[in-house]
Length: 240
Image 1 (cartoon, helix red, strand yellow):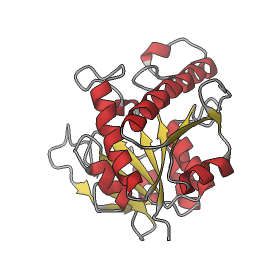
Image 2 (cartoon, helix red, strand yellow):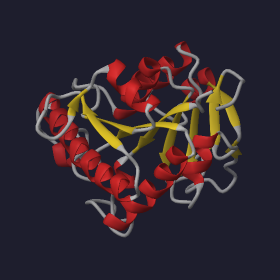
Image 3 (tube, rainbow, N blue to C red):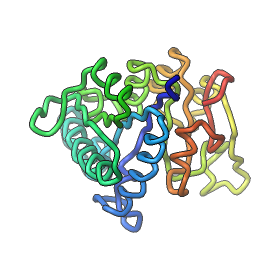
Image 4 (cartoon, one colour):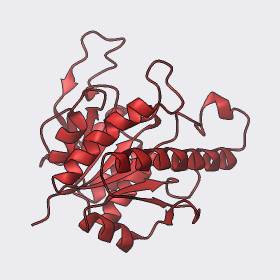
């Protein structure tokens, strides 16, 4: 019986030099790739959705005054750069990998084809989804939820720089408490910053648990993929 299939959402932070917060840092990417490769070798089916905020963020100050759709397309291209960097790192770790993009860039990656992506996963390959949904006005969080639903994933794993979801911002509120679990509607109503509302709603409608965890702690990515308790789970009560 195949082990579970997950979609790992990596923000641009997973690629950036931690000291400056942007750009592409080979050491940072290699650490991430090492953990993904290790669980892939164990038989887990891992698909990855990458962000591009370390290079360009459509809604950031860098895009101030720029037409939104154009800025979002630029952000999609940034995710392709990250996807290629991650593929290179994964292959150096011995993992077989494919990049699929929602924008047609046939010289560097496959187009996104759902059944082909599933087949790659069944063959033990890591699949990296780039260029978001291929449409402006949608976040890569929504892409992660969409792709997870399409490929029949068991969970969405959101890698962040914090330990999970807190009752308040722990940087400003010393009484903030880390939540072990909460339901989808609470996450939406309280606007706890888990994911955007579209992404959470899509996960809720497809009974997809979301696990939010700290990717900067060595071993956490592997733990999340295996389904071990780490961070916070958002679900309807069955865990991620």
